[in-house]
Image (spheres, rainbow, N blue to C red):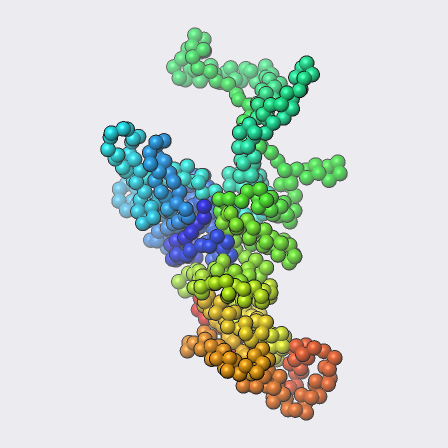
Length: 562
């Protein structure tokens, strides 16, 4: 089960949104872009057993405009099969729709209401049998009103917010991480497949199902609790209940009985608390600090991946919280493993939770004059493209998803030196959200550029006309150069700078041969990229002309909505 498509109208910062969600979905964007609002829309309508009009308020309406209605529709793949009656044909529910609107007529006119609908694949209300089917009788149908509990249960949603409270993931919380794991364990227990050796009073041992032994122990525990006060309370409830129902408590006491029942096995699991012992001291893990609780929540998440690999929708806000880079990379692997059988939707500010080869899993969230918008790449992926991008896999290159403007360069020489020229031009690239990414060689520029452009990221390319990547293959390189040049757009959202001389030759020309050779000798014990950076830091020297133009473009104000 997964959410295949999400439609949102007039919810918080979102005026209108219609987006397809992949199995693993990373929502990436600057602060206040609306990433959390996308997750909130999902959790608001699917993360509760029961929802009513009080789940929303006027603060949830776009622009707090009282004339607007909020609509949230989640489409599922595969559809949910629902039986209105036991022997009826199942109805296929393709989407759940929620509308926070106002009554248009009647005594409640103007008041808010919440309308919930089950929709079919065409977006129409689902029809179900109006009464139980009988042999030889023509079926009569009616629209399915509201959303049955069985349908909600078919969409298991787990939410991990920025408040990493462990209490929300203990077994008694309906949409917790631990509960579905223990439900699976309880189902196995109740299937009687789990056995235990039990010693009888005469000393003989017998193997019986664990669930039977549990029931016996619960009866014994309940008998221990049968104090006179407990018995009197139970008797009082029974007598008063009989009286309220029109029975005589004395003469009719055998007609109805009321009594306390011991825990069922799942009730016992739901009552469990996770404890931490250090030395002789034990304490509930829910009493510990946020960082400690976050570690436990993530440990449960990893246990979820190990023991339950099917059917849930996990919604996670900023999984990188409290984690150093190595653990971020480890958790990203866990999320991808969970995503093999469950849908994972998360927000992130970390390049360790996205990967250029898996760009189809990334949705860019931006906020413009028309509210929050989400863009997904329209670039078709194939094995050849993925193989090329995987070859150049580097966490630093993943930063392109977080850039308001992006400059792609061939290698480390440009990546290290251009920021230094920017400083000398008083250009703050970081403040503008600009990023320089080296593609690992000229041949990789085209693939990286296509990915960035497919998201609408303002993208620049700086490359040498004659690169060592192509050796003596001048015809092939000329054709490749033409492909790079063709990416440029008239509106300036994509710029291409072809250096007719190599990068080092541009610096040599700007400084003069004598000065250039002097600096090469001065920094002679360094590698080529480091030497280029040190030369760029020489404050009394001119900035090569093409680099100034490139950097001013890179540091310019982001385009609206970018």
